[in-house]
Image (tube, rainbow, N blue to C red; front, side, top):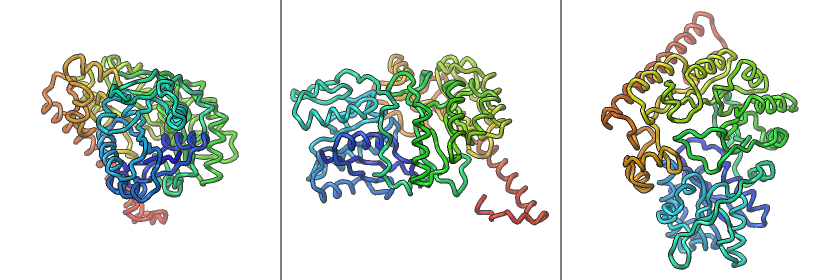
Length: 464
């Protein structure tokens, strides 16, 4: 079949490589299908341009789009879906996938006009789906899809068994403009670094109440396979920095040791960053990570209050947070400190504690602010919100409540919405003032070094 995969524009100046779609492209190619990529992201095309593009092409059999569950992505899905439906060469089938449609496929089918939703990881599902469409056999035999049948009834086939992550083909890099995607920036990357994401695993060993993931459990890749993929990216595309994109590289101390020891044996060194857990952030582990090239660890802290952490099922304590962050700073790694507020039982006091924590430990590599917790469909927090009358349903979430990630979607606290927003505004004003106060001090110090010590390494104020 002729398949068009659409990479949507998320509004970034330089976009990150669309890894999920590239995995699907690899599976399609291996199965013998023809794959074309429509790069709305690279060119910042308006949604409606896709209509003209489809009109000018020989009709595609399938158009595929994957989206996550954010307010921006939802609206991009609506705009792109409208553009597809408007084409005189509308594809025979329109397929949606990703974190957005997977927990609520019926709603996304209704809103998009798509023919199918592929639920969960799609590499095998999409091949079986296209095979069924091509050969005319029963769609009920394809696990992991949702669709409207000939009687107008929505059908959801059983969930698919999870794949062996070491058998999944690499993303199909050759179909994408890597020279563009490698320009994306990451913490600790120099201006001469070329950055690419690589997945070291799928899933997570924890289940926080605000988190939705498409597939249960944790499936790590073999370190050898990861190293071979990185070597390919180094040799073919000159990649010097790997952004490990999976939810949790630091899943255990043993796994970190195995990965770092393999990286240290590679012929070419590289910088890298990952998502980490503070309960594994010992000095020994962190020093090994740094030796193997790690420059940044992104930590999901979420709250600096033990009771709030317990309620959100974080399996983390404030003592572990402090110890892990201080260890990270001690070994000379950048630490990403991510905090949300407004989970069940949180208050002004928990916000105060989290704000003070960030003011003390956040460095100037990132502006760290606090966002309200958002109960995405599929998460335990979404179910809680519906059961307690705080949220109607999926449509209420996407059409009325979730309008911006920095504004309240559902209020789980005892504050009014206005009180909540004012408290969050005051906290973030403090954090912004602290951040730029530190940045100002750094710039003044650099200026003094320039003029008093004749610092010839100075590259200009605009570089700062």
